[in-house]
Image (tube, rainbow, N blue to C red; front, side, top):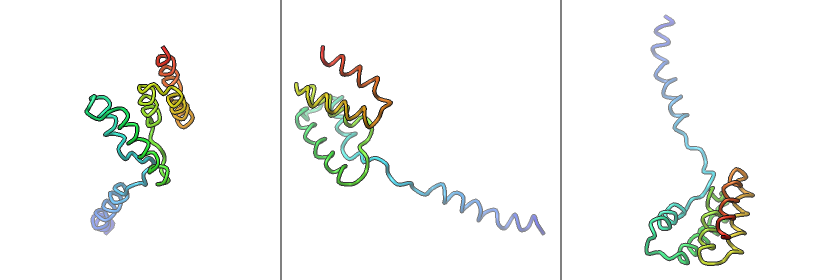
Length: 118
């Protein structure tokens, strides 16, 4: 009798367990065009650094408006774009933002700052 009960209920328990695992958790970060901008940066695409900076600044406003967090590396990448354009004040500002939001990045951000000033 008990084994029959187990045999009949096991598929339902399995289905409920799998349904619970498949439930999506809410997004923590808003990536928007960040990945495409990284791709454009590293491939040296036809998109100028100035255009990439503008796109990232526009996306940053959208991210803030959405209430989601800025993803890791976003401010660092934006800082590198500013630094490449010679705007060292905005470079430093973005690197500091990255360090404050993601303290684990401090060592790498300090490395970028030291090597960018050379």
